[in-house]
Image 1 (tube, rainbow, N blue to C red):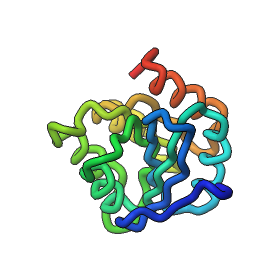
Image 2: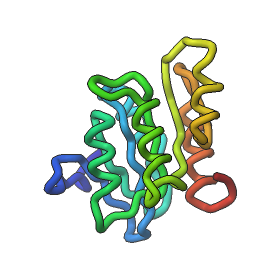
Image 3: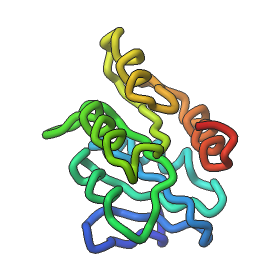
Image 4: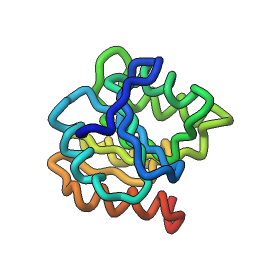
Length: 147
């Protein structure tokens, strides 16, 4: 995280990249999982990482004008609103519906991969996942080589 963290008006954390408008939103209520993902994403050129600890906060960030979010990396199990509902709302929002979404989750329900696939996510990584694989998928999305 280091010296590049600032607190925007909405209260979410942002780690700025090198000026390329490539922002990814991590939606995760576990600080350990956030740290793992942030470390995995270090060194992706021009990446800005936004952090939301809840689905409701994530929706506020996504709907805020100014910094377009190029991809969302989210957990499913969160308080108040789960990741499934957040993804449904993103897909129903005309301005956000094409946002690529990567799911990382400890959800052990065997139906989960199918449920998230039906919601149109780009990838599903069950925990424990390989941070390098999540990074590779995010880089493919940001480079436009995959949705």
